[in-house]
Length: 310
Ligand SMILES: NC(=O)c1ccc[n+]([C@@H]2O[C@H](COP(=O)([O-])OP(=O)(O)OC[C@H]3O[C@@H](n4cnc5c(N)ncnc54)[C@H](OP(=O)(O)O)[C@@H]3O)[C@@H](O)[C@H]2O)c1
Image 1 (cartoon, rainbow, N blue to C red):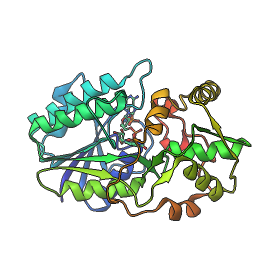
Image 2 (cartoon, rainbow, N blue to C red; image 1 turned 135 degrees about the horizontal axis):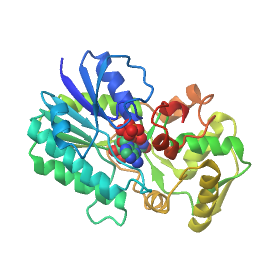
Image 3 (spheres, rainbow, N blue to C red; image 1 turned 60 degrees about the horizontal axis):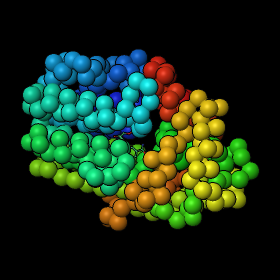
């Protein structure tokens, strides 16, 4: 059995990864800035501070670990956090892991990262992939496009909107594509890759690719609220997202997120590495999908409540 350090074990993907590792009998320590967040693990997970101002404490937390699993990232910039800072912070974490001599790193990146991407998200992810490669630590980079299952944000909120509104606005022609992977399949990939050797890059993608319009219709049908789709220009979509965000006290979608989606960055042509098909998963989960809005900023404001309730 191995010792894992997992960032954000009480967050979204980190929680699924931790569940899987504990079920396999591994020891899990978490690095988290939300040590008081509700979680199902009792005393099974040792909690260490994810405090980038204390690299020595990060190093101590990584000491003796066979594997570091890194999920830490920020979705967009807001007062108090930014993707540039997340890049810098993650470099501090990688340096601490290197000094501690962790055996392997499994790093969760994103599909289609690029050092010259116009999008800070994809550029920052590419910078971190290079930074990890430069450490010389054996590693796997996992590149998911979009996650579903559990308290995900995108698919859940597409369902939430269809439950509440009579029409659904789709940016442009809606023909840009996504390849979702179930968060449990991502956890399984982490387990497989933790046992690997050398340096690997793996697209984390499920067995089905959807156009955005197909995805919205498929979700709508599954929850019994299939709405007419209305093509809207990017600016109108962004304006609606802003109004909704003001009402919900959240950032529903950002301009760069819409642009990256429309630029087909959430799809890859790689062979599937996840096995759970969204079309098969949906019917079994339709009753809970989109019943409550999943609020990214509430997850940042409230560090005590589990993501399922935020
Ligand atoms: N979700 C997706 O559809 C998706 C798609 C493609 C790639 N990915 C990648 O997968 C990885 C995990 O994503 P996830 O959705 O599972 O993320 P998550 O659980 O929401 O966040 C991962 C970790 O980052 C921390 N974090 C998030 N936003 C933060 C902020 N603004 N300030 C400080 N800490 C913050 C969380 O902290 P707390 O523990 O304090 O909450 C958590 O520990 C990320 O690297 C992401 O880029 C996700």
